[in-house]
Length: 201
Image (cartoon, rainbow, N blue to C red):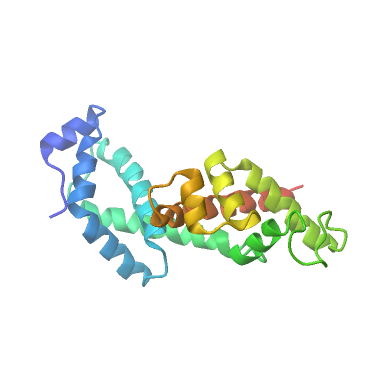
């Protein structure tokens, strides 16, 4: 059963969160399986892992309260992660016109390296397209250097996975793919935040 021992609970309440490492490692497969079933496999493994990690932060606060119920913690974690994924999906769904392929298209053409009808200065863009470009580029600047460098090499410089792996010294192409997925998720969040801020003006 997915439970913490009384000793582990006391450790957590004393500021030692290491018992969660044990709980996560021992129950990882069940957590992913439970979340995959609840979401009907609509999300990537990376998104589910991120949601589970965030659920552990919530659980940490719960454990420190005296009325904490130490039963089926994994079910509780899966429930929190599921709600987190749904909230993120709702935010993403509100980002109309900002699918990943469109973000990639605008960034990759930022310097006019592709079609002749897409100039470096965006002279041929209508107001709505220009607004999208501005928001995407502002969001890109808000990312960490690692994410910005990775996406720039993949999208703007159009390098393949192996070239990016070597230049940025990633351990494998799989790590490049996983990191790209998480960076894109962060980029879309930044875009969404900028869109919401723009609407409030």
